[in-house]
Image 1 (cartoon, helix red, strand yellow):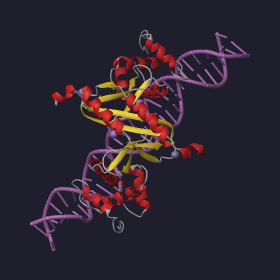
Image 2 (cartoon, rainbow over the protein chains, first blue to last red; image 1 turned 60 degrees about the vertical axis):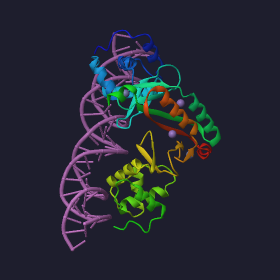
Image 3 (cartoon, each protein chain N blue to C red; image 1 turned 180 degrees about the horizontal axis):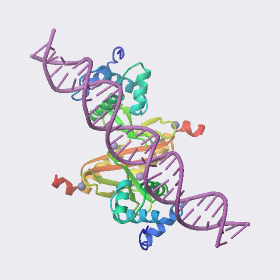
Image 4 (tube, rainbow over the protein chains, first blue to last red; image 1 turned 180 degrees about the vertical axis):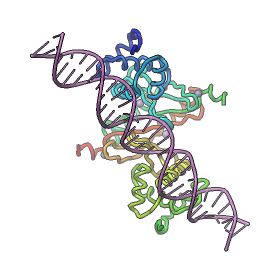
Length: 148
Length: 148
DNA sequence: CGCTAGATGACAATGATTTCCACGTCCAGG
DNA sequence: CCTGGACGTGGAAATCATTGTCATCTAGCG
Ligand SMILES: [Mn+2]
Ligand SMILES: [Mn+2]
Ligand SMILES: [Zn+2]
Ligand SMILES: [Zn+2]
């Protein structure tokens, strides 16, 4: 099965970063489609988009790919109440937080330094170690507010 | 089926707060067991504990009860990575955040005023309305660290 | 005491994710 | 060149929390 032409350099780099990973056309395709998605997508949506792109790939493999990419820290994950996990290519370095529209799914990243510092302090004060955090903001974006 | 003796006053009060709710033995039992649980529990665990208490109640009803209680704001909810939602009776008033041990599940509430203010500010600055947030902290508690 | 909207619970259905497993693909020796 | 085995793939089946269905019950009111 043909999976796609040359990779846009940056994507090829990312493929290489996946740990214990052999480079396969499928993984490259997942990463390529992911790179073209501005917003969070579910594994299933990803699968559909890949199919629409003419890429034949098993849903199982899509799941495995996003799992690997998540472990590798290349994806941000967010959990929707209705569906399961939603994935998005991590824009820059490090970990970020997003404000997501509950209506249309549009997302924008927010500056959460305040929270990062606070979380670190909490770790120190409580006797807990290896403190991690999940922070999700949801709301209704300006565009969806008028449309309602 | 016998559901239990007299309700510990406070629980009876809470039952009354459930919106559009009729007072049934099952709901009272759910709330009573929930009040006796120091940590977060899943709907299924709740069902098991009820059974252990000699309360015969359908799993479906347990789910409906926690849903109603969540809507009524009487429960705090967090989402476990593996299982689904975990519930706990909301200790005092308003919304809180917790630091949960990834090993043993023990939880303690944290003071997140800083984050609350920050979240409000984000809402104002981004043009989003009705901004809500989910914030969960996880770590390894002191007790589990030595035990590992 | 009846009536009825609301509540219950056994069972089936849903749906995302995972597990199985038989089959490809790649590469390091021989 | 072969060949073995480790890794990757993907269809199908399994898992599992949660929700829907629907016949039956009951709390609460007049
Ligand atoms: Mn953060
Ligand atoms: Mn908060
Ligand atoms: Zn929107
Ligand atoms: Zn612990």
